[in-house]
Amino acid sequence: MRLEACLPQPPVSPLPRRITVTRMPVIVVGADHPLGEVIARKLAAPDREVRAFVSSADAHGPLRSLGIKVALGDLSDESHVEAAATSCFTAVFVEPALGDGRELAFAAPDAAARGWANAATGAHVQRVIWVGSNAPPIKGTQMAAVAVESRSPDEIAEEVAMLDDLAQLPSGDEGGRSDSNP
Image (cartoon, rainbow, N blue to C red; front, top):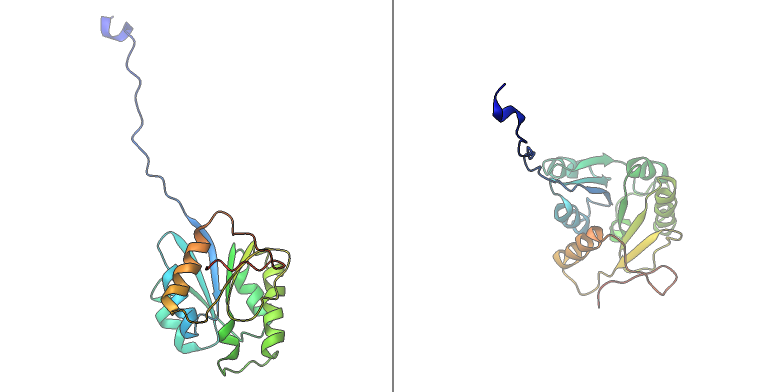
């Protein structure tokens, strides 16, 4: 027997493993609105599953080329929004898409916004980022509202991306509304 076989051997250290952090899935409802498209583009990254809900077939190709999963439907169809948002952690609702003149076959803009809230609840979305001017109709979930007045689409998209990266959304004092900009 060889002496080396009896001596303690140094521990074999495993090769360092690369740690990959994958962000939770997010859907942008109204991603075919100019503001929604900027937000979807900002969120698109290899480590993030981004979905887009659009009502224009023309928006499908450019968003898919970024690796975004695209669902096509009527923004006022609560059941289609809910199906597209299933298994998403965050939903970004782009309120200006409800008032840009597109056809809303199932509900008027105010009712469609309430339908988005119902869709988020039905899809078990954990948090909502509401992008728009009006008070969001969201209750019972983590929620942040991003104001759009006097801000560029890039500034708004940057804020949405920052909010989506937070472990916890800031808590608001206006019945769930949390405007994160000063």
